[in-house]
Image (tube, rainbow, N blue to C red; front, side):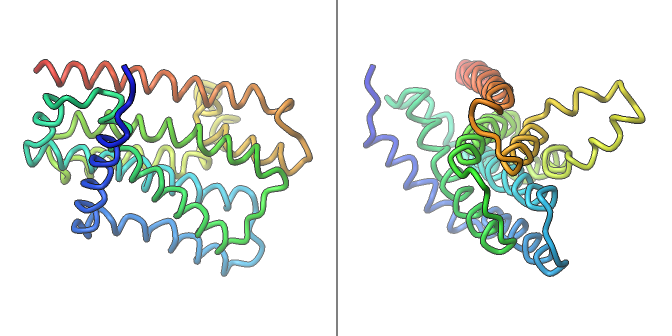
Length: 235
């Protein structure tokens, strides 16, 4: 079955208009930008701080806006109609993900300009960020499907924003508590490790394992998204 880009664009256009009217959700864009301004005025911005801003952007913009878009559809009882429309699962989720995807790119670029982040190897960082976005889009979609309202989505998403937005700070606990070593494999931590490797002059051949871990996270969450979506479609 071939994708209908006309349907995808229609879904994308609808979500873009709905988001522009929802100041509560769109105001989330301000959070990482304000954080970027704060860190840029603290003197030299380290890789850790650059990626604190970037990971916050991925958690709050990519994932949360995606979650809120889906939750709003459920709250308005329009998601069921979309599920029963001729549009396929891929077309619906692609169309609904494009808004979050493009807003994330804009937010990351703006934040990087504010903090002065210029990666040594942009292609590696770009690939890592795109794969990370796929993970966060899938995560946001799942949480949106499991939420009944935008308000509920906001509440249940707070721990996720903390874990993936500020999760890099938890690495400090790994040395004291070995049981928390799984934290090192979280997508946000892998992204920071890739950034450090890139600044050390390494390329794709040296960070492939980190990229594979990111891709595995994205693949697993995408499959889980499809499962949850199909389950909600039959409920």
